[in-house]
Each structure stands twice: as structure tokens, then as C-alpha cells.
Length: 129
Image (cartoon, rainbow, N blue to C red; front, side, top):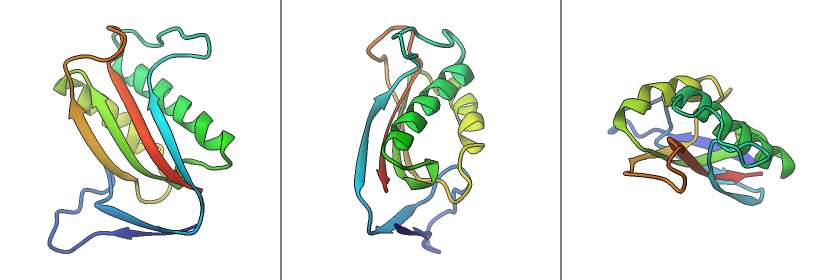
């Protein structure tokens, strides 16, 4: 798979937080369901701790990517839901350490709640492998 980061000069460069666009050629699309801070047994990890929850969410995303033969380098888009604006910094701190290349495109939404009242974050993704 070949990817090219698209960064028009007319737009602010948000990297390393996210990329404005990613053009992908070849490979297969992988759609990753919204991942939450649940472990293998369905237990919520990191109740009340956005960094711990974010790490668990990305561990879950990594597991899906690896099961499909990919890695974070294959992730081209994420949609992130957090339940409070104050969680943004903790989420960004964890996320910045994950990408070796330019980060995927990203959408961040603040929502009033998620499927479990203990969830602070949920992330869905698209990868090209």
C-alpha cells in the first residue's frame, strides 16, 4: 500500500496531531468499530482516567489492525468521541506517541455520553492494508 499525506498550503498544518488528508493506493480497506476502554473480559479499564482509557482504546485498535495484518502506519482515519472537552489534552498526549509516520486524518467530537457511563472515550477507524 502506498500513501501520500495531503497538506494544502491554504490550510493550517495540524501535524503531529493529525493530517489534513491521506491518499491511499492499493491495499484493502479495514473498517474498525468504535473501540472503548474495555479489556478482553469486558471490564472497563481506567475508570476516571482519560490517559488510561485512551491507552486501552488504542491497544484495542492495535489488536484489530494486527489481526488484519496491519499496524498504526496503515490507519488513515479516526473518529474520536470524548465526553468532556477537558479530556482532549490527555487523549492527545497518548495519541502523539503512536504514529511513526504522519498521523491519520482525524475527527474529534464531544458527546454527552457513550454506551457505558464509565467510558470517557471511543475511537473508530479506517485503515488501508
